[in-house]
Length: 323
Image (cartoon, rainbow, N blue to C red; front, side):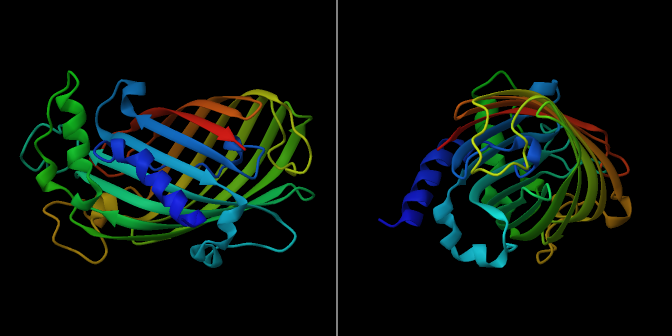
């Protein structure tokens, strides 16, 4: 069995118990840096952490980084600047979205559509330790629609917990192709030893799932390895820090609201005129890293994504292992 066959078999084994479960996760930010060129990380997100039960249901994100992935064919489509230190990774991601009332079998006009996505994310994180800057690029390929298993996900969970069973998934965004390319840039603007780090960031994303751009700021406070530091330099064995990442997003298109690009037969979508074009988002969290163990708790706040919508709160946990 080849390296890639072993990897995909491992991913299938890990995600299969959750594929009927069910946000999009971006682990490429410097606040979630792991000081290894190889690691595994698992993310579980749920609006339970913020005592809400609408818009985002649950998310599963399984991430694997290893130097051997540099030979993966899709890596050739990503940005790999010369003289930068590279991390190569693959991730499986599953997200589900619902309106405020997921029990009603009727379409709730003016509310968020039911939607689910399942995708494979190929990514490269390139770091220039001397100039204290990072370039991250990624390609996501997959599906939006019933094929992503969002309805089965939420139904299974609610049948086995004290929650109402959803009845509106037949109104979800229909099957369509997900192909999205993302490019991000981060630059250190201030650092106080390894106790405070402030960096500016920018991101642009285009494709069939999401078209948007943002600018933001990342603040890290605590004891940590400088996220722009070369992997070749031995880092701290113990890290404990808080981070905050506010950002302003300019939205051009969102298929989880407006439906897929190629299949226009969804029973209900949000019209482009009602999509909020400027959205503020803030992510904050606490990270503990000891030797090769990574633990994180985070929360996220986002202003409303469409005219008749509401602000969104959610949270999650992550566990990872370096090697």
